[in-house]
Length: 115
Image 1 (cartoon, rainbow, N blue to C red):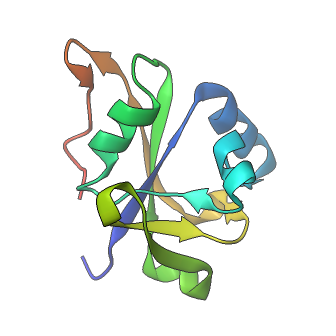
Image 2 (tube, rainbow, N blue to C red; image 1 turned 120 degrees about the vertical axis):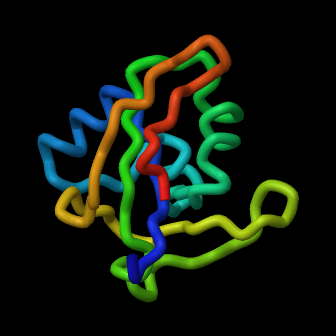
């Protein structure tokens, strides 16, 4: 694999809107902050626990960080860790794959293909 995957978690309504239009400026928090929030493989479980606790019907979507070009910036966030932030519209055609992110007994159940 010659690229780094980054991940975006969508609520059901956000995912449906993204599928229908083929593009998105992100969730309400993304619109407020002025960029689309992503997480790395090592960050996404904590993101789910912190921002989506107890929420079912989520969709986990993978993207190629390199393909985002210069609009993707790595900026400090939680605890100073660098998180990928996209400063442009996100296109459905950029998605590598998507998987349901169901709730389990101990939180969200992530797919084994998380890279």
